[in-house]
Image 1 (cartoon, helix red, strand yellow):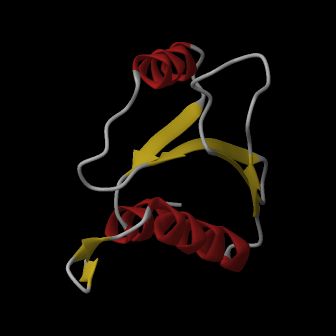
Image 2 (spheres, rainbow, N blue to C red; image 1 turned 90 degrees about the horizontal axis):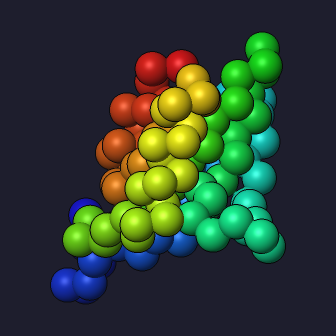
Length: 97
């Protein structure tokens, strides 16, 4: 989706994620690690003990090498991780929960 010829901003996708998570009774913590670069943008805690590490990007954005490494590490440890690029992907992710 575009506004006035400009691509959607990551902050708009992030607000959409927070809206979904709040409606589900959860919390989407903004996270920035001081000691580990590449950690996901949000840690989402949902009712029932479900925790997700969510990276948000815009169309045309790309994962940095440390972000790719973080995603691989989460997969290796069996953690829930998603990289979402659009509001539509946020909607689809929320529908699977």
